[in-house]
Amino acid sequence: MIKRRIKDMQFEVCSPCQLDCKFCATGEMRVHDSHYQLSLEQLDRFLYHTEQSGYFIEKIWMHGPGEPLLWRHLNEGLRRLRASAAIGKIEIITNGTYLKRIEETAWDCIDIIDVNIYEDRTKIPLLERLQAFFGAEKIRPRAAETFKRVRDENFQPATIPGKCRCSGPMLYGDKVFLFCGPPVFGAALRATKDLLADRSLWVEVGPNYLEGYDEKIAGTLDLCRFCWANENMDEVLEPHTSIGGGWQPQNRVRAE
Image 1 (cartoon, rainbow, N blue to C red):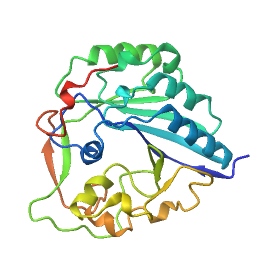
Image 2: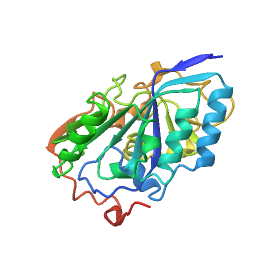
Image 3: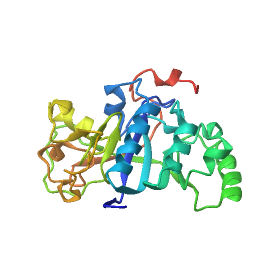
């Protein structure tokens, strides 16, 4: 029996990424734990308590905070998510380099794949073939030519409340951040705040873990004044480049 519907949930599965984008909305989260991988035990615990709590998540947004197709348990994880009665659509946001890691049975578990196209255009023919097979509604390339970065020069906190770019709570390992997505890690650094020490922001996965979740709170927290996801933030539009970020030695990452 469904007791509560959650429109969206950010789903963070791994930190590694083979790119080193100059600007990355999730970069600080990747640096926090550069070896992070959501385990199958953590996934099973999340699904169990989601089902037992009577929650139905209408859409999972699978991110990294690195490259989600480098998740060690990608294919089995997708199958377990699809088998759950508590999960609706599954959408993956990827740079598309490792699409060939997706097994045939896992393709059937995915509803939408958003593929960011950076300087490397060589993957476009593959995406066109995938679109011809699966349909344009499932395979969605999008040009990522620019990035809105926080104006860190003479930084001024943004006003609140502000519309938040992140949608829904966020799963990260055995924690659920109730009101924030990946950019909260960058916000905490700007605010010189110990993010994990603030138990008002996150809960451990367990019975009724979303009891304190209220979507109206997103964009109203004091930390939102320091967050890239706050649309009131003073920003600079820059050309996007997939090199020069210095987010860790992820250029040496290999798919397992």
